[in-house]
Length: 385
Ligand SMILES: Cc1cc2nc3c(=O)[nH]c(=O)nc-3n(C[C@H](O)[C@H](O)[C@H](O)COP(=O)(O)OP(=O)(O)OC[C@H]3O[C@@H](n4cnc5c(N)ncnc54)[C@H](O)[C@@H]3O)c2cc1C
Image 1 (cartoon, rainbow, N blue to C red):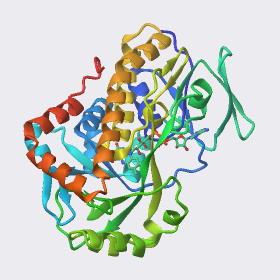
Image 2 (cartoon, rainbow, N blue to C red; image 1 turned 90 degrees about the vertical axis):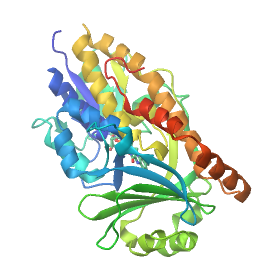
Image 3 (cartoon, rainbow, N blue to C red; image 1 turned 120 degrees about the vertical axis):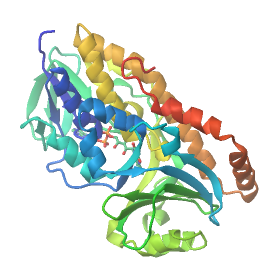
Image 4 (cartoon, rainbow, N blue to C red; image 1 turned 180 degrees about the vertical axis):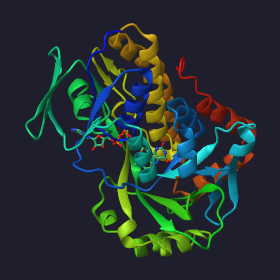
Protein backbone atom coordinates (compact mmCIF):
# COMPACT_ATOMS: atom_id res chain seq x y z
CA UNK A 1 0.00 0.00 0.00
CA UNK A 2 1.46 3.40 -1.00
CA UNK A 3 2.15 5.55 2.07
CA UNK A 4 -0.44 8.32 2.43
CA UNK A 5 -0.51 10.97 5.14
CA UNK A 6 -2.50 10.11 8.26
CA UNK A 7 -3.32 12.56 11.05
CA UNK A 8 -4.71 11.77 14.49
CA UNK A 9 -6.74 14.45 16.24
CA UNK A 10 -6.33 14.29 20.04
CA UNK A 11 -3.43 13.10 22.17
CA UNK A 12 -5.43 11.26 24.86
CA UNK A 13 -5.17 7.52 25.49
CA UNK A 14 -6.90 6.66 22.17
CA UNK A 15 -4.76 8.99 20.04
CA UNK A 16 -1.43 8.02 21.60
CA UNK A 17 -2.11 4.26 21.63
CA UNK A 18 -3.23 4.43 17.99
CA UNK A 19 -0.07 6.27 16.96
CA UNK A 20 1.96 3.44 18.55
CA UNK A 21 -0.16 0.76 16.84
CA UNK A 22 0.31 2.45 13.46
CA UNK A 23 4.08 2.74 13.98
CA UNK A 24 4.22 -1.00 14.61
CA UNK A 25 2.32 -1.70 11.38
CA UNK A 26 4.68 0.43 9.30
CA UNK A 27 2.38 3.45 9.03
CA UNK A 28 3.19 6.81 10.49
CA UNK A 29 0.69 9.33 11.79
CA UNK A 30 1.10 12.79 13.29
CA UNK A 31 -0.92 13.48 16.45
CA UNK A 32 -2.37 17.00 16.86
CA UNK A 33 -3.29 17.82 20.47
CA UNK A 34 -5.10 20.94 21.72
CA UNK A 35 -3.22 21.29 25.03
CA UNK A 36 -0.07 23.34 24.90
CA UNK A 37 1.65 21.08 27.42
CA UNK A 38 0.95 17.62 28.74
CA UNK A 39 0.62 17.88 32.51
CA UNK A 40 0.06 14.87 34.78
CA UNK A 41 -3.72 14.54 34.72
CA UNK A 42 -6.53 12.64 36.37
CA UNK A 43 -6.60 10.00 39.03
CA UNK A 44 -6.47 6.22 38.72
CA UNK A 45 -7.62 3.86 36.00
CA UNK A 46 -8.64 0.22 36.04
CA UNK A 47 -7.10 -1.79 33.20
CA UNK A 48 -9.00 -4.97 32.42
CA UNK A 49 -7.30 -8.15 31.19
CA UNK A 50 -8.49 -7.20 27.68
CA UNK A 51 -6.46 -3.97 27.84
CA UNK A 52 -3.41 -5.89 29.06
CA UNK A 53 -3.72 -8.21 26.03
CA UNK A 54 -3.89 -5.14 23.80
CA UNK A 55 -0.78 -3.68 25.47
CA UNK A 56 0.99 -6.95 24.74
CA UNK A 57 0.16 -6.48 21.03
CA UNK A 58 1.58 -2.95 21.25
CA UNK A 59 4.76 -4.29 22.85
CA UNK A 60 4.36 -2.30 26.08
CA UNK A 61 2.69 -4.74 28.47
CA UNK A 62 5.77 -5.29 30.63
CA UNK A 63 6.25 -1.55 31.09
CA UNK A 64 2.58 -1.00 31.96
CA UNK A 65 2.62 -3.93 34.41
CA UNK A 66 5.71 -2.49 36.08
CA UNK A 67 4.10 0.90 36.57
CA UNK A 68 0.72 -0.55 37.53
CA UNK A 69 -0.54 -2.85 40.24
CA UNK A 70 -2.15 -6.22 39.77
CA UNK A 71 -5.63 -6.59 41.25
CA UNK A 72 -6.47 -10.17 42.27
CA UNK A 73 -10.19 -9.56 42.87
CA UNK A 74 -13.06 -7.09 42.89
CA UNK A 75 -15.75 -7.12 45.58
CA UNK A 76 -19.03 -5.25 45.90
CA UNK A 77 -20.11 -4.53 49.52
CA UNK A 78 -23.21 -3.09 51.08
CA UNK A 79 -23.05 0.00 53.26
CA UNK A 80 -22.28 -1.98 56.41
CA UNK A 81 -19.46 -3.90 54.71
CA UNK A 82 -21.29 -7.18 54.00
CA UNK A 83 -20.24 -8.82 50.75
CA UNK A 84 -22.75 -8.62 47.86
CA UNK A 85 -20.61 -10.17 45.13
CA UNK A 86 -16.97 -11.08 44.55
CA UNK A 87 -15.11 -11.54 41.27
CA UNK A 88 -11.89 -13.50 41.65
CA UNK A 89 -9.79 -12.34 38.68
CA UNK A 90 -6.90 -14.59 39.63
CA UNK A 91 -9.08 -17.74 39.55
CA UNK A 92 -10.96 -16.68 36.41
CA UNK A 93 -7.80 -15.97 34.44
CA UNK A 94 -6.88 -19.69 34.84
CA UNK A 95 -3.16 -19.13 35.05
CA UNK A 96 -3.04 -16.56 32.25
CA UNK A 97 -0.89 -13.49 32.82
CA UNK A 98 -3.53 -11.20 31.39
CA UNK A 99 -4.82 -10.07 34.76
CA UNK A 100 -6.56 -6.89 35.84
CA UNK A 101 -4.35 -3.96 36.78
CA UNK A 102 -4.72 -0.45 38.10
CA UNK A 103 -2.50 2.44 37.08
CA UNK A 104 -2.24 6.18 37.66
CA UNK A 105 -3.38 7.99 34.50
CA UNK A 106 -0.23 10.10 34.50
CA UNK A 107 1.90 6.92 34.41
CA UNK A 108 -0.09 5.49 31.52
CA UNK A 109 0.25 8.73 29.54
CA UNK A 110 3.96 8.91 30.23
CA UNK A 111 4.44 5.34 29.07
CA UNK A 112 2.47 5.92 25.84
CA UNK A 113 4.35 9.16 25.12
CA UNK A 114 7.66 7.41 25.60
CA UNK A 115 6.84 5.13 22.64
CA UNK A 116 6.06 7.88 20.13
CA UNK A 117 8.67 8.93 17.61
CA UNK A 118 10.33 12.28 18.04
CA UNK A 119 8.11 15.03 16.58
CA UNK A 120 5.13 12.69 16.19
CA UNK A 121 3.04 14.64 18.74
CA UNK A 122 2.33 18.31 17.98
CA UNK A 123 1.00 20.28 20.96
CA UNK A 124 -1.04 23.51 21.04
CA UNK A 125 -3.09 22.48 17.98
CA UNK A 126 -6.79 22.94 18.80
CA UNK A 127 -8.87 22.17 15.72
CA UNK A 128 -11.13 25.05 14.74
CA UNK A 129 -12.35 23.96 11.33
CA UNK A 130 -12.10 20.86 9.12
CA UNK A 131 -12.83 20.73 5.39
CA UNK A 132 -13.91 17.11 5.21
CA UNK A 133 -15.19 17.25 1.63
CA UNK A 134 -11.75 18.22 0.21
CA UNK A 135 -9.12 15.80 -1.09
CA UNK A 136 -6.79 15.99 0.76
CA UNK A 137 -8.72 16.94 3.91
CA UNK A 138 -7.76 20.31 5.36
CA UNK A 139 -7.49 20.95 9.11
CA UNK A 140 -7.42 24.53 10.42
CA UNK A 141 -6.22 25.10 13.97
CA UNK A 142 -6.94 27.95 16.37
CA UNK A 143 -3.37 29.26 16.00
CA UNK A 144 -4.13 29.91 12.31
CA UNK A 145 -2.02 27.05 10.91
CA UNK A 146 -3.39 24.53 8.40
CA UNK A 147 -2.55 20.90 7.69
CA UNK A 148 -3.53 18.88 4.62
CA UNK A 149 -3.96 15.18 5.27
CA UNK A 150 -5.18 12.19 3.27
CA UNK A 151 -6.71 10.45 6.28
CA UNK A 152 -7.94 11.62 9.67
CA UNK A 153 -8.34 9.49 12.80
CA UNK A 154 -10.55 11.36 15.23
CA UNK A 155 -9.66 10.82 18.90
CA UNK A 156 -10.79 14.12 20.41
CA UNK A 157 -12.95 12.67 23.18
CA UNK A 158 -16.63 12.52 24.09
CA UNK A 159 -17.37 16.09 22.94
CA UNK A 160 -15.66 15.42 19.59
CA UNK A 161 -15.62 18.42 17.27
CA UNK A 162 -15.56 16.23 14.13
CA UNK A 163 -18.28 13.82 15.34
CA UNK A 164 -20.60 16.78 15.87
CA UNK A 165 -20.00 17.74 12.22
CA UNK A 166 -20.49 14.22 10.88
CA UNK A 167 -23.27 13.06 13.19
CA UNK A 168 -25.01 16.16 14.58
CA UNK A 169 -27.83 14.02 16.01
CA UNK A 170 -25.57 11.80 18.16
CA UNK A 171 -26.62 12.11 21.80
CA UNK A 172 -24.47 12.48 24.91
CA UNK A 173 -26.49 11.31 27.92
CA UNK A 174 -26.19 12.35 31.56
CA UNK A 175 -26.29 9.18 33.68
CA UNK A 176 -28.00 10.90 36.65
CA UNK A 177 -24.99 10.76 38.97
CA UNK A 178 -21.94 12.87 39.48
CA UNK A 179 -18.49 11.72 40.55
CA UNK A 180 -15.60 12.86 42.75
CA UNK A 181 -12.19 11.21 42.41
CA UNK A 182 -8.84 11.50 44.14
CA UNK A 183 -5.56 9.68 44.77
CA UNK A 184 -4.14 9.58 48.30
CA UNK A 185 -0.86 8.39 49.79
CA UNK A 186 -1.41 5.42 52.06
CA UNK A 187 0.97 3.95 54.59
CA UNK A 188 -1.60 2.43 56.93
CA UNK A 189 -4.15 0.38 55.03
CA UNK A 190 -3.28 -3.06 53.68
CA UNK A 191 -5.50 -3.25 50.60
CA UNK A 192 -5.22 -5.96 47.96
CA UNK A 193 -8.52 -5.98 46.09
CA UNK A 194 -10.48 -3.22 44.40
CA UNK A 195 -14.01 -2.70 45.71
CA UNK A 196 -17.23 -0.77 45.42
CA UNK A 197 -19.69 -0.13 48.21
CA UNK A 198 -23.29 0.37 47.11
CA UNK A 199 -25.26 2.25 49.77
CA UNK A 200 -28.34 4.44 49.86
CA UNK A 201 -26.44 7.75 49.84
CA UNK A 202 -24.30 6.72 46.90
CA UNK A 203 -21.47 4.52 45.70
CA UNK A 204 -17.87 4.51 46.87
CA UNK A 205 -15.05 2.79 44.98
CA UNK A 206 -11.55 1.95 46.23
CA UNK A 207 -8.69 0.93 43.93
CA UNK A 208 -5.18 0.26 45.30
CA UNK A 209 -2.45 1.71 43.06
CA UNK A 210 1.28 1.03 42.91
CA UNK A 211 3.67 2.89 45.28
CA UNK A 212 1.35 2.83 48.30
CA UNK A 213 -1.33 4.99 46.76
CA UNK A 214 -5.09 4.58 46.74
CA UNK A 215 -7.45 5.82 44.04
CA UNK A 216 -11.02 6.37 45.22
CA UNK A 217 -14.22 7.62 43.65
CA UNK A 218 -17.64 8.55 44.98
CA UNK A 219 -20.82 8.76 42.88
CA UNK A 220 -23.92 10.62 44.12
CA UNK A 221 -27.28 10.99 42.35
CA UNK A 222 -27.69 14.67 41.53
CA UNK A 223 -29.10 16.83 38.69
CA UNK A 224 -26.73 17.58 35.80
CA UNK A 225 -24.12 20.27 36.67
CA UNK A 226 -25.75 20.72 40.07
CA UNK A 227 -24.68 24.09 41.53
CA UNK A 228 -24.76 22.74 45.09
CA UNK A 229 -22.67 19.64 44.22
CA UNK A 230 -20.14 21.90 42.53
CA UNK A 231 -19.42 23.43 45.95
CA UNK A 232 -18.97 20.14 47.85
CA UNK A 233 -15.76 19.81 49.78
CA UNK A 234 -14.13 16.85 51.50
CA UNK A 235 -16.16 17.59 54.65
CA UNK A 236 -19.42 17.30 52.66
CA UNK A 237 -18.39 13.98 51.13
CA UNK A 238 -17.37 12.78 54.57
CA UNK A 239 -20.88 13.62 55.81
CA UNK A 240 -22.56 11.55 53.05
CA UNK A 241 -20.34 8.51 53.68
CA UNK A 242 -19.69 8.74 57.44
CA UNK A 243 -22.07 5.80 58.15
CA UNK A 244 -20.41 3.57 55.54
CA UNK A 245 -18.03 0.79 56.64
CA UNK A 246 -14.32 1.50 57.15
CA UNK A 247 -11.97 2.33 55.53
CA UNK A 248 -14.32 4.63 53.55
CA UNK A 249 -14.62 7.47 56.13
CA UNK A 250 -10.89 7.14 56.86
CA UNK A 251 -9.93 7.41 53.17
CA UNK A 252 -12.11 10.49 52.67
CA UNK A 253 -10.65 12.09 55.80
CA UNK A 254 -7.11 11.49 54.50
CA UNK A 255 -7.83 13.29 51.19
CA UNK A 256 -6.60 16.79 50.52
CA UNK A 257 -9.11 19.21 49.04
CA UNK A 258 -6.80 20.23 46.17
CA UNK A 259 -6.60 16.60 44.98
CA UNK A 260 -10.35 16.30 44.41
CA UNK A 261 -11.57 16.03 40.78
CA UNK A 262 -15.28 16.44 39.97
CA UNK A 263 -17.16 15.31 36.82
CA UNK A 264 -20.75 14.56 35.87
CA UNK A 265 -20.97 11.05 34.41
CA UNK A 266 -22.02 11.07 30.76
CA UNK A 267 -21.80 8.67 27.85
CA UNK A 268 -22.46 8.66 24.12
CA UNK A 269 -25.60 6.77 23.10
CA UNK A 270 -24.21 4.09 20.73
CA UNK A 271 -23.89 5.45 17.20
CA UNK A 272 -24.19 3.44 14.00
CA UNK A 273 -21.07 4.55 12.12
CA UNK A 274 -17.42 5.06 12.96
CA UNK A 275 -16.01 5.18 9.40
CA UNK A 276 -16.67 8.01 6.92
CA UNK A 277 -14.41 7.19 3.94
CA UNK A 278 -11.16 9.00 4.86
CA UNK A 279 -12.25 9.84 8.41
CA UNK A 280 -12.51 7.41 11.33
CA UNK A 281 -13.87 7.99 14.83
CA UNK A 282 -12.14 6.11 17.68
CA UNK A 283 -12.00 6.17 21.51
CA UNK A 284 -14.50 8.30 23.41
CA UNK A 285 -15.25 10.25 20.22
CA UNK A 286 -16.79 7.03 18.85
CA UNK A 287 -18.07 5.13 21.91
CA UNK A 288 -17.76 6.95 25.25
CA UNK A 289 -19.14 4.79 28.05
CA UNK A 290 -19.99 5.38 31.71
CA UNK A 291 -17.10 4.16 33.92
CA UNK A 292 -19.08 1.39 35.64
CA UNK A 293 -17.19 -1.42 33.92
CA UNK A 294 -13.88 0.51 33.92
CA UNK A 295 -13.74 0.04 30.15
CA UNK A 296 -13.56 3.45 28.43
CA UNK A 297 -9.79 3.60 28.15
CA UNK A 298 -9.57 -0.19 27.71
CA UNK A 299 -11.78 0.09 24.64
CA UNK A 300 -9.64 2.95 23.29
CA UNK A 301 -6.61 0.65 23.56
CA UNK A 302 -8.52 -2.20 21.88
CA UNK A 303 -9.40 0.28 19.10
CA UNK A 304 -5.71 1.06 18.56
CA UNK A 305 -4.71 -2.60 18.20
CA UNK A 306 -7.70 -3.49 16.03
CA UNK A 307 -7.02 -0.57 13.69
CA UNK A 308 -3.37 -1.58 13.40
CA UNK A 309 -4.52 -5.09 12.49
CA UNK A 310 -7.07 -3.80 9.94
CA UNK A 311 -4.39 -1.65 8.30
CA UNK A 312 -2.01 -4.59 8.11
CA UNK A 313 -4.66 -6.75 6.43
CA UNK A 314 -6.44 -4.31 4.07
CA UNK A 315 -5.38 -3.15 0.60
CA UNK A 316 -6.44 0.47 1.15
CA UNK A 317 -6.69 2.65 4.25
CA UNK A 318 -10.32 3.40 3.45
CA UNK A 319 -11.10 -0.35 3.49
CA UNK A 320 -9.21 -0.69 6.76
CA UNK A 321 -11.40 2.04 8.30
CA UNK A 322 -14.55 0.24 7.09
CA UNK A 323 -13.26 -3.10 8.47
CA UNK A 324 -12.53 -1.42 11.80
CA UNK A 325 -16.13 -0.19 11.98
CA UNK A 326 -17.44 -3.71 11.32
CA UNK A 327 -15.25 -5.17 14.06
CA UNK A 328 -15.86 -2.53 16.71
CA UNK A 329 -19.51 -1.36 16.52
CA UNK A 330 -21.17 -4.31 18.23
CA UNK A 331 -18.68 -4.85 21.05
CA UNK A 332 -18.43 -1.18 22.03
CA UNK A 333 -22.25 -0.77 21.97
CA UNK A 334 -22.57 -3.85 24.22
CA UNK A 335 -20.14 -2.34 26.71
CA UNK A 336 -21.79 1.10 26.66
CA UNK A 337 -25.27 -0.37 27.23
CA UNK A 338 -24.17 -2.91 29.87
CA UNK A 339 -22.24 -0.24 31.75
CA UNK A 340 -25.26 2.10 31.65
CA UNK A 341 -27.46 -0.62 33.20
CA UNK A 342 -24.87 -1.47 35.90
CA UNK A 343 -24.82 2.22 36.84
CA UNK A 344 -28.59 2.29 37.27
CA UNK A 345 -28.46 -0.71 39.62
CA UNK A 346 -25.46 0.61 41.57
CA UNK A 347 -27.07 4.01 42.17
CA UNK A 348 -30.41 2.81 43.62
CA UNK A 349 -31.53 4.86 46.63
CA UNK A 350 -34.80 3.18 47.63
CA UNK A 351 -34.05 0.87 50.63
CA UNK A 352 -36.55 -1.79 49.49
CA UNK A 353 -35.14 -1.93 45.95
CA UNK A 354 -31.62 -1.97 47.39
CA UNK A 355 -32.39 -5.02 49.52
CA UNK A 356 -34.00 -6.84 46.56
CA UNK A 357 -31.01 -6.00 44.35
CA UNK A 358 -28.51 -7.16 46.95
CA UNK A 359 -30.40 -10.42 47.49
CA UNK A 360 -30.49 -11.12 43.73
CA UNK A 361 -26.77 -10.37 43.38
CA UNK A 362 -25.94 -12.65 46.33
CA UNK A 363 -27.94 -15.48 44.73
CA UNK A 364 -26.41 -15.03 41.27
CA UNK A 365 -24.30 -18.10 40.46
CA UNK A 366 -20.60 -17.20 40.03
CA UNK A 367 -20.71 -18.97 36.63
CA UNK A 368 -22.95 -16.20 35.23
CA UNK A 369 -20.51 -13.53 36.35
CA UNK A 370 -17.63 -15.58 34.91
CA UNK A 371 -19.44 -15.82 31.54
CA UNK A 372 -19.88 -12.05 31.36
CA UNK A 373 -16.22 -11.54 32.24
CA UNK A 374 -15.07 -14.06 29.68
CA UNK A 375 -16.94 -12.11 26.99
CA UNK A 376 -15.15 -8.98 28.10
CA UNK A 377 -11.71 -10.51 28.42
CA UNK A 378 -11.52 -12.84 25.47
CA UNK A 379 -10.61 -10.40 22.75
CA UNK A 380 -9.59 -11.48 19.30
CA UNK A 381 -8.24 -8.36 17.62
CA UNK A 382 -8.76 -9.91 14.21
CA UNK A 383 -12.40 -10.92 14.54
CA UNK A 384 -13.86 -8.90 17.44
CA UNK A 385 -17.48 -8.16 16.62
C1 LIG B 1 -14.80 9.19 36.42
C2 LIG B 1 -14.21 8.37 35.31
C3 LIG B 1 -13.54 7.17 35.60
C4 LIG B 1 -13.03 6.38 34.58
N1 LIG B 1 -12.42 5.21 34.89
C5 LIG B 1 -11.97 4.40 33.91
C6 LIG B 1 -11.34 3.16 34.22
O1 LIG B 1 -11.17 2.79 35.38
N2 LIG B 1 -10.89 2.38 33.18
C7 LIG B 1 -11.03 2.75 31.89
O2 LIG B 1 -10.63 2.00 30.99
N3 LIG B 1 -11.63 3.94 31.56
C8 LIG B 1 -12.10 4.76 32.53
N4 LIG B 1 -12.65 5.95 32.22
C9 LIG B 1 -12.82 6.33 30.79
C10 LIG B 1 -11.56 6.90 30.17
O3 LIG B 1 -11.09 7.97 30.95
C11 LIG B 1 -11.84 7.39 28.78
O4 LIG B 1 -12.58 6.42 28.06
C12 LIG B 1 -10.55 7.67 28.02
O5 LIG B 1 -9.78 8.64 28.69
C13 LIG B 1 -10.88 8.15 26.60
O6 LIG B 1 -9.69 8.48 25.93
P1 LIG B 1 -9.76 9.32 24.57
O7 LIG B 1 -8.35 9.47 24.17
O8 LIG B 1 -10.73 8.69 23.64
O9 LIG B 1 -10.40 10.72 24.97
P2 LIG B 1 -9.82 11.86 25.91
O10 LIG B 1 -9.09 11.30 27.07
O11 LIG B 1 -10.97 12.77 26.20
O12 LIG B 1 -8.76 12.62 24.99
C14 LIG B 1 -9.15 13.47 23.96
C15 LIG B 1 -7.97 14.37 23.62
O13 LIG B 1 -8.33 15.20 22.50
C16 LIG B 1 -7.95 16.54 22.75
N5 LIG B 1 -8.86 17.42 22.01
C17 LIG B 1 -10.17 17.68 22.27
N6 LIG B 1 -10.66 18.54 21.39
C18 LIG B 1 -9.66 18.83 20.53
C19 LIG B 1 -9.55 19.69 19.39
N7 LIG B 1 -10.59 20.42 18.95
N8 LIG B 1 -8.36 19.76 18.74
C20 LIG B 1 -7.28 19.03 19.16
N9 LIG B 1 -7.33 18.21 20.24
C21 LIG B 1 -8.51 18.12 20.92
C22 LIG B 1 -8.08 16.70 24.27
O14 LIG B 1 -7.27 17.77 24.76
C23 LIG B 1 -7.60 15.33 24.76
O15 LIG B 1 -6.23 15.29 24.99
C24 LIG B 1 -13.18 6.79 33.23
C25 LIG B 1 -13.80 8.00 32.93
C26 LIG B 1 -14.32 8.78 33.96
C27 LIG B 1 -15.02 10.08 33.60
